[in-house]
Length: 590
Image (cartoon, rainbow, N blue to C red; front, top):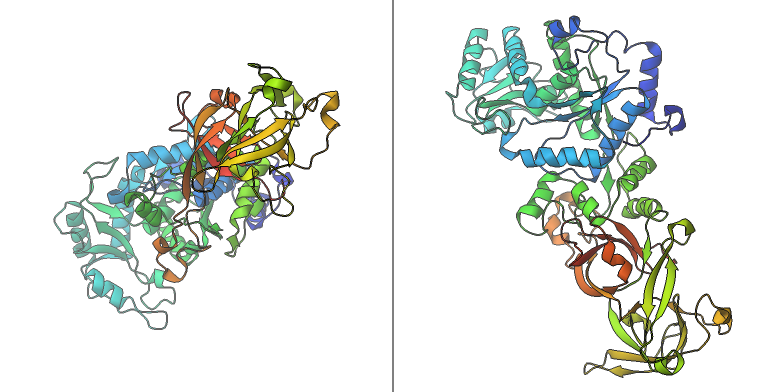
């Protein structure tokens, strides 16, 4: 887990100001925590909470986490660490049709990979909404008995129509004033599986004329005959997220419930529900408070789990960890690092208003994280042979020369890497032109360049393939110009090109990934996001790489000189079959 900086060293934001004010005022003192979530009766007997604050990260296990979740993870776990608190990992498993153990495991893995943990003082603070289904049932019954909830038997279509609009009040249901005993009986029958899905729901009884549509008798429970990945078939009614979420926060003694802005309109119901349950003696005060912050909107990226799932299910990507997806698993396989995502989250900060972040900001954080760490290597991604015709005359027939280059140019302590230079090498096809444009300082008939870490060579010509493209380039080496020797500076050249020796080059599959969508906002205005898919988001090439890359472990990152940052694929790379994914290019001008 990353070592947290003191809270005072971090840039302030409105959430930090709220937490600091709460701590200074003593508003959070006197809370109890039993070592596990508990209701008011349990908490009254528990010791004082040792955590100064409690936050939570509450994903629904219905898909893989994405870059937006990474921001929330860094925020919730980071604030808890900075202020002597604890962050809970809570899996909000209230929608069994779309949830699975696979997603639970993926969520755990993503949080840990980012460098955070939910264990504090030897106690695991991983919780599930399903842990509280019994309490939620009792809470719902208590609301019915208090006249604050009722079973409604309207159709879903009638409920929508009678809800009203922003300018017109809702129409009360014909079942709104049914006797308490009648609603309790119907609710028990719902739990016993005696009614069909969609035939009835439990609703809060608040205000059908409220200007906030979320207070117009929102649904609390619905019938679902679905197998739950943890509770099996014990339940056939499931709480709505808006009902479950505040109860979970209260039972876990969360002090600051941090949500994205789309939950702002739900806050009045959040507060209403907790206040009613506290008055009924089911929850202990002080009650948690909800605060909203702007979600992450990243250009050229979709973060709707429903739409990401569609891409996966329709086979438009290879899976949830496809390196083109903004899922944490996909970003990891693409070569993004935990440090890069934490740095990105820190740089974009926290605000109360929605805005768009340009994708290059994320790439910049990645480069800043990788540049001081990634070892260097040479690779040729679009290879064409370069034949050094006078090799035997200058160097000697059958001889090879060993060249050296630093593992990292600014960290000599990391040592040198070695590779062989001989009469045939691979160069990039783009490093040769039959008729060079103005300002072209690489190979062309009569042109001179330095083979990086090797000799200066002068191009003598090239052979064309049947289609007119270059098939083979020819050059001669200039004696006494090898890098690192006294004569290296004797011949001045403007161009330096990378290469890989044919004698020890290793074949590799290199996957050139680009952005998955061509549009900055693929689904803006309800547009069909599939129409914005980039047909060239993946290009696979057969490349030649230097021999040091033969020892690359899956998941290890490198800077391929001139090309950018690449990672050995987590799933398909092996010593017997090298597979590298392009993570991002170098900065312009580098």
